Structures are given as structure tokens and as C-alpha cells.
Length: 170
Ligand SMILES: Nc1nc2c(ncn2[C@@H]2O[C@H](COP(=O)(O)OP(=O)(O)OP(=O)(O)O)[C@@H](O)[C@H]2O)c(=O)[nH]1
Image (tube, rainbow, N blue to C red; front, side, top):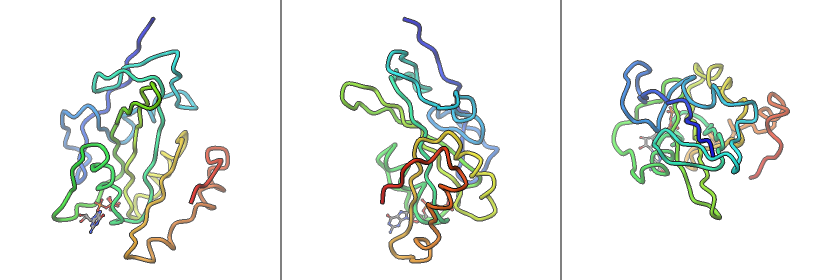
């Protein structure tokens, strides 16, 4: 059975778009499968593939983390991927970044490519371009900040990306 390798994500940094690192499970704008995958972005179980970390997977999904700046998107992703909490000073994401995680679900290896978008308004046009082909958008808000909840507009996302969003789950 043939096994193919996905394009390597280049290094990423939360505060800079120019400092590469060697973490093969992370990437930045235009470097991941989101930029090069087929239009539906799914790899089916009959065609196992190799993730950048060397792990084989059966199926892959692209997930976007969306929400205002400071709601905790990066912290959630780092917690999910590495089990660590980013305490200390807050460094806002510049542009967009991603991390991969392979999970074992019902005897399938499911690869999640999770994109962390910058919440600042000035990056909105850049990050929106990456919604295309996403299988899920996670809309995040800060429970201590009502404005961050009010700023979530799933219907707008549905309207603007009418074929890519089929269902909103509260
Ligand atoms: N108390 C508390 N603080 C949190 C939590 N999650 C994140 N923070 C803090 O909130 C701040 C912002 O977190 P980030 O994850 O960087 O926020 P973000 O949504 O990625 O922000 P942008 O990159 O600007 O879009 C950081 O100082 C975190 O330490 C949480 O669950 N509880």
C-alpha cells in the first residue's frame, strides 16, 4: 500500500512570522496542508498517510480557532496539543499558525490540523482566507468578557462561507 507524506509545516512563532523552529507539528501561513490539500481536505482511511511528526493517520480534518484577541485560543491549542498552560505575559498571535495532533478514535488515527488565528481586527482579512476548506470552526469567547461573546457572529460566517459551513453547534 502506498504511503504519502504531507507537506512539512515550517517553523512557527506566536510573536513573529520570521523566526523558524524545528517543530514539525506546527506551521505558519500557507505552509500546511490547508494551503495544498485537495478541496475537501480529507484523507480517507483507505489511504493511510504520514503526518509531519512521523505518525501515520487515516483521516485528517482542518479545524479553525476563531475569536477575539485574548480569549485564549493559543492557550487552548497548546493545552490540547502539549498539555501545558501558557502562563505569564500575553503575546498576541501574528497572522496565523497551526499545530497537528493525531488521536486514536474507534480504531482510526484521526489527524487534526488546528489553525490558531490572530484575534486582532487588523489580521481579519488574512485569517478569513484560511476558513476555506475548514471542516470545523471553533468560536471562542472569554466568559469574563461579554463583548468577546457578542463579537461572535456564526451567521455571518455562514453567509460568507455558504458552502463550507453546514451546521452550527452551540
Ligand atoms: N485565567 C485564565 N487566563 C487564560 C485562560 N486562557 C488564556 N488565558 C490568558 O489569556 C491571555 C491570552 O491568551 P491567548 O491564548 O494568547 O489569547 P488568544 O485568543 O490566542 O489571543 P490572540 O493571539 O491575540 O488572538 C494570556 O495571558 C493567557 O495566559 C484561562 O482559561 N483562564
